[in-house]
Length: 221
Length: 221
DNA sequence: TAGATTGTTAATCGATTAACAATC
DNA sequence: TAGATTGTTAATCGATTAACAATC
Image 1: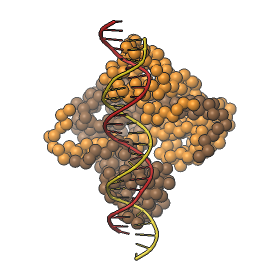
Image 2: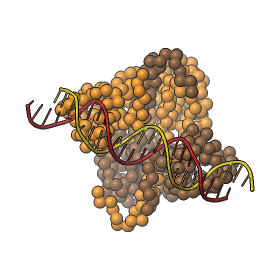
Image 3: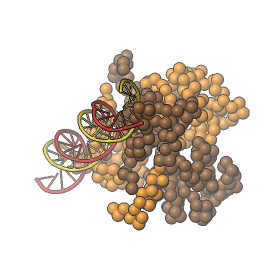
Image 4: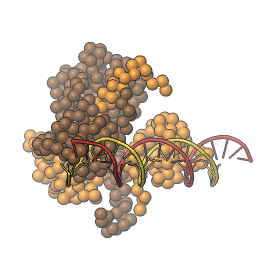
């Protein structure tokens, strides 16, 4: 139905939402694309183009109403919905995400936490007890789980993702260092932390290299 | 010196490295761009273009030597270097990253962990004691810290990033939900977890919408 | 040598930016 | 109404893909 929106555009929406949230907190009523552009360091043109993928949210001569735009972007991102989720892997990362979620007071509801380490069974993550992996398939079905957060090592992640798919999971938030192979009706969002760290490493190292090459020659823009 | 390499290219290098690492583990000696292309689901053309930004690593009629290419990409990413880092924020996320790093056996060395909660002072994160925030500035200088990992809430993160910059940090791996404003000689890599989750939310919700629009009409490619 | 596959140039595609008419 | 600012079309820029000559 919707014409396909590029992932580049989708990727920018959460950032718009964040800035709009801050404006809301400051009780700013309206904002123009050029003001927002200055705050966010993107072009006003891009902001208008991005938003107009979804409809005309502004008004000529006025700009955008902050509350309205905030709520429209929330809707676009599907944040007014409720999602039930489970965490698979009760290590520090799993615990961290358990605490995080209910993320920003949005509708992400932690229903269960699973681990294959018997020592952890029954220990609490937030308000939920850690359960054995064997219970995962039935739990997903009985509790109408939408999202699984994968915070286990990659070998396990590949196996578990199959189980998840077989039991009708809608989406996987994947922190394992591996690409999952799932059918196209299952959404996957990868957070590859080590990839991110390597990018940082590259940028440190390439910045230093360029500095050597042009000693003292700071960019003057 | 180097012509500017686009961040799109940099962003793909860690994934190449990951697949090459797996091939190494399987004792595969050489691989062609088209074989790698099939494994990674990117075009062979893109692989060759990406690599040729940095030099000719292959050989006509042969392909690429896996070990050699792996080590070249490692060098490009600056992974043969050692980096000293500190974690700021000793919560679950900080602890998770402390455990992670020494990341994949690479040269990221945890030197210190800081928190503003006195109850945590002296508790251990991996092999390092949690220290009070006040000690941060001198610690950075005395221990030659390259990277700070920011796992504290956004208000604190903005303040701490200023302290870090003043004390000569080279890079910040930022997990706080805010854009940091630092000079161009300080590299920042953001991991905005909630942005990532929102993308997932969008994709769930837009997939379902499109499904309604064309009931039963699965893509058949 | 013949076959394979790179490195690289050229063509295409998509995303970003600029410009401006429409309109509040 | 005049001024401001959007929505949208057109122009530009950059990234991806295709093609092929070079060469191992």
